[in-house]
Image (cartoon, rainbow, N blue to C red; front, side):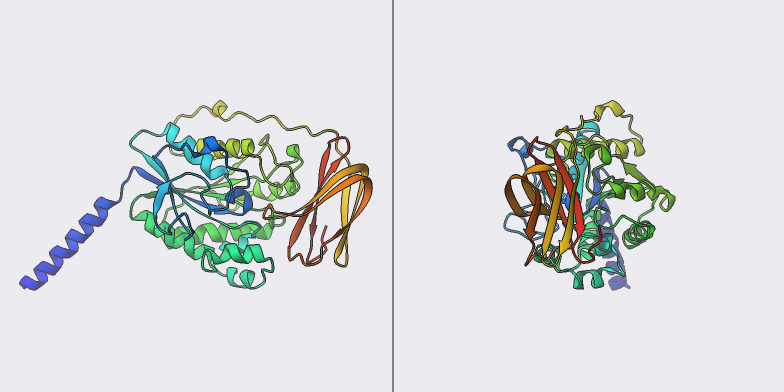
Length: 372
């Protein structure tokens, strides 16, 4: 009888310690997506100044970080060679508004160029098998070949210390082109909630738009589907990208664009948590003008791409969905350019042309299907 009493007492003590360890004032947010969630803008010196109340749980092992440990959220958050992105500015804005006793933690898992399938319990294995780009294989391997599982493992660890309050999602450039994406998003969200024993009403999903038409976004068409997310997920909310400045590839946001987008994620989350926020605090960034637009097209011909323009070009850059420039050409006013693509294992390429008059235009091409 005495032994049973001791065991029961030990269990109660263990429960008490575990309960005590969870800080209700440590608010955790899961951050998921592809390259714009990874962060493609260059980290600036001033970005290293971060409030200690904003922390990041390392989701990978790297030379400068150990998986499963918390650190002050100094960028880059995702991996050692990533840039700065919306998560950085989300956390900074949150701690500005929240009471001093509240800390903010992020669990950040993202892979450049990935489709939603990578986070889908039933689809990720086939998706990973069919990845051909070496850089994407390497990024997936950071998560032991299963980013979804790594997200869940890190989230469970974070739950021991704090409370998950929301999910930030920025992805869709690759595959948000049909209603199948909406169905996958519903499954992914419900899967995460189920695995972590979370209530949708307490853990909303915030989904950011990709670079929009106002910034000549090369994937702006995906926003038509992203904007419908609440049709399938009542507790989802769209974060507008209107006016958020774009980078030179018209695919990834500029530093200022990420700052604006991150603030919008934060202001929406704060309002959902019952805080009075001033919407004007997230100013609408002025759209960049790069000169008059022009027509740029690209067609595949074997291992080459034929790029044509109705304006003379001074340069042409070919960018992967990871944000890496894989070809760079300096031109002398040509309107038709042949680009050697041999050896490139990229599912999608973006051609960025700069005209002699300074105007920029982009054109996206699907390498594997030849879809345009």
